[in-house]
Image 1 (cartoon, rainbow, N blue to C red):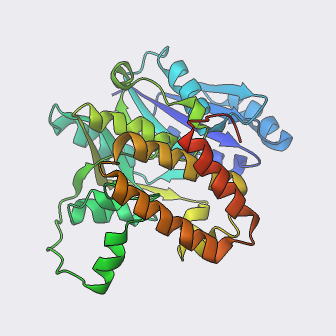
Image 2: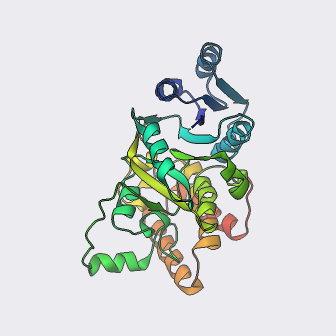
Image 3: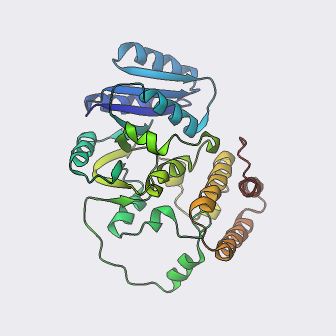
Length: 316
């Protein structure tokens, strides 16, 4: 299986990217496409050296940070021109373990025809493992009529817990959508699902794109034996406490795009009861106001809600 790896980088993250690239080359990938989203000068200089010294290294240069959706779209369009049949998407801090790629390839050989994408397992995103072990897709997708993952029924279940089923100990399982980092698929899939929606810019753009696989009636499989370590912990993983408290220190751009894009995703895929959805929204907004009324991010939240309702996809 000939594989093209696509990695998006930005800021001053060359030291992370370099570790990821080295592991990919040792794993036997055929080409590496790096999309540089306006990195710092020191990273750019080192990337140019890498491009000269490493075989089959291709770099797409952006003079502005165009967001993850546009950058991965650029990488995917470039990969379509290469002779390799498979694509593996990675973030610039997704360091694969030694046998990750081989385990993805091995699973692909024996998969059923309705499986169109595999996802390597990132241990700091335990909800994906929990979803397949408990056969609860909602742990990833969110309940129908939830608002930004918030649902009144979840709060009631905490007050009146139900007995959990015994976990499924299979080493793979179906998931509804996937982040970019770790996705493995044949490039022919792009003819079926198209490209990421660059208007979403970042946050939930990968969910919107990968969920098209599920909506087409195909499967995405999480492979627990194909492990990727996140060598730079993301904001969401570092801040696992109350969402309403953590939002005080969240970057405004994260608050805006995560709320706006998630609302658009929910509207298109999860809302089946407008009254229940409205109840979850107003409860969410109430808690946002309680914890963040005097915080500038509360106004960012209100703007994101307004823009989602009016389908305003202009950049923040």
